[in-house]
Length: 148
Image (cartoon, rainbow, N blue to C red):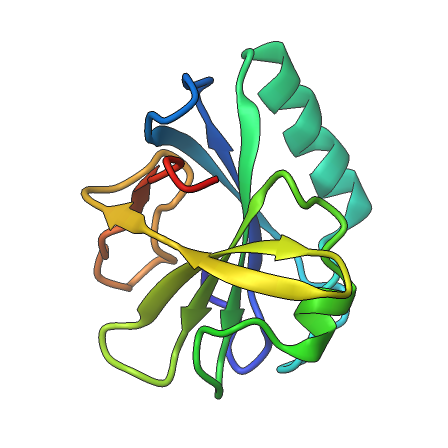
């Protein structure tokens, strides 16, 4: 997810899971931030539709919408809350203010509130390859859904 100084955006697919069990991330769908902004993102709708079609075809679920905060902590902004259109999916925010980047997950209710949820990070996910010339980093591999 390299887009700095603009926010990066991606969708994260998970395998279906039982209530109380952790979800396992299976694929990251990187997107283009049409806003080209450091404080907001809009993923290209054609990329969203393509990702949703692939997720549906494989029997997966949308587990999270992932985006970066290039200059702020990994906490939902007022804009993030206002535009939380998929309350069943987590919001994973990656802050680029630290090295390595800080990653936190949030359950958000549109226009109202957010609640941090546990996140397990291990290994890498298909689709989360680093850009050419960059060193691979760990990627989100599991989302703890027990508190959802």
